Image (cartoon, rainbow, N blue to C red):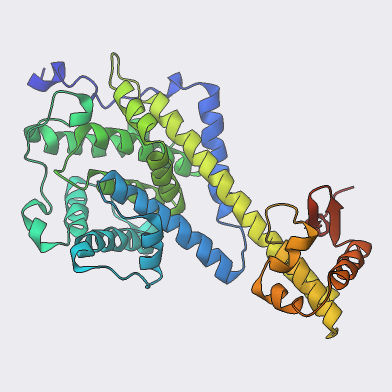
Length: 379
């Protein structure tokens, strides 16, 4: 028996998936279905790119914050769109952001051609993350600082290379291999979550552990054909529920090590994120179809009432709920300009006409557009 086998009992690199309850496999299946559905959703180019950019920004922001950064998600978004301006004192944070963005973009570009993940590749990823010359001493090197005594403190530095080798061999070995090719994505999700847990236990680097975990997760998922979005959603979920995340990591190391509750926690979070993202994508789809419907409805009509009514329907479709009559002209600068020189009676006539042709529904709290007119198979 090795000297550390009696003290680091939670790192035994074993997992009996037969002990997972049926609900575990159900959520895993829902995640795979959600990923495949999301990758086939056609969206208008501009709106689709904006949604993707927001998802990426949130995922990158999450790993940065988990590593101690004070960057906000809005500033990450600004940097992705090229409009962020920072003070000289803030340039270090931007360098770290660029390092993470560069590595993840490289992984996404390589796709299914990514090589096997091994310790040397992990070291090269960590070196790329630390592009700041002032941290060159730690670039591409395992942690040398002694660990504490708890699972979350990491293992002693002298066993890090061994444990990282064992982890990666185990992840890519026969015990955790997908039984069939069609289950490859499902098992990649499990591998990603196992990696998340074990890197938290090992803590192989003096810094960047959250970013290197996210990078390894991206490598695993992208190489299995799942794309980068699931990794971003997992990162965002773990940051949003950081207290529970740490509790789950600690709990999995107590007594007889059991990773399944942590895996289930991660799968539930991913499934929730995928569901919310698909819902947002459906809203974008509906709004695009609504614009096309209105273009047909008002085709050839340049009269002022028709232009006002079309703009009402466009702006109402962007609202989350009903809008009171007197608030309709305030929905956009365009509407405000259109109704600036007319009476409230004109607004009422426009709304009455839209209600008459079935495009607007009146309720106790105001008016909403009838997007359900676009739905098929309702009867």
